[in-house]
Length: 398
Ligand SMILES: *Cc1c(COP(=O)(O)O)cnc(C)c1O
Image (tube, rainbow, N blue to C red; front, side, top):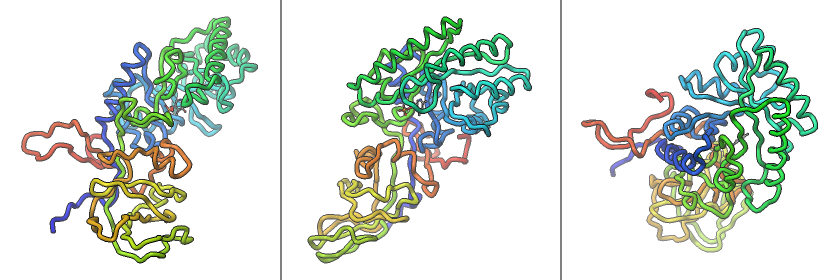
């Protein structure tokens, strides 16, 4: 029998989907600019792959949590504007300034950032962050005037340049909740206070993906979008397709074993599941070490054009699928799609099966799973065979 010798496990990443998603979001939020969040290895897709695709799709900015993530993009040759917003005492602000990385500043960072700028004799570009209700990072409204005074002083001394004022929303994925209105009210007040301190930045930015897609009044000068860039819906009641987006990751492997078992057979550690009738079981060679949540139960997979469900506990390296009949066509080597691709299975369904969301499912795919970049819109060069040139990260230019 002919063997297809693909990788044993792969997260297949489609830059064309990322380009499409950014274009779709950009046209929706126009004239606001688009910052694509590529933190956490581009939500698991590969930061450099995601960054290039997002920029090609029309993103104006890239966003990362950490300066180290932004520096890695610079090291890969990416010159687009980048904002990094989550810092510690160990963050190298000097490296950020030297590499033209904009810095989110919520409070204490303003001093080490200004010091680093002074030692480099080059102004730091900062975006001041106000906490309008999320309770995470960001300056409280009480401390805001003091931060503005300090920032204005450093700006006068030429140590910083205040490029933006931003905040982050807590419940935009539930568009009916009034807390988003309260956050937007407080944000507008914070802008007024800034103006009283003669701080009027070019870039006011608030919206994450759900707000970009549901709250035009949150668009301001730029939106910061992550999950939508990767073709995932942030809303519980709307699919990726409903939003006109395309999933950029397909997670797949092949069936490692098939066997027929009698009624009463227990499945996997803890024997939490017992079969009530004779059936065939398929073994899927991916487990929690690969990012498949251990707690997921009755999660969908796609084999030979049909959906099946996982049974029993997910183990470190594998889980079991009930093929629901003895007389199955499924056999060893058949492709198993866990989500994405032609399966129609959304990462969000795995999120639901595991008590989490699609963000966590795509971001947690482990290092044991190679990211295989296959551009669905790549035209084959004459004489090089099939379309969809596959590249492992680290091979070729990107
Ligand atoms: C991750 C992040 C975003 C993007 O959020 P999505 O919901 O993925 O669009 C935007 N802003 C900040 C500050 C973030 O940390």
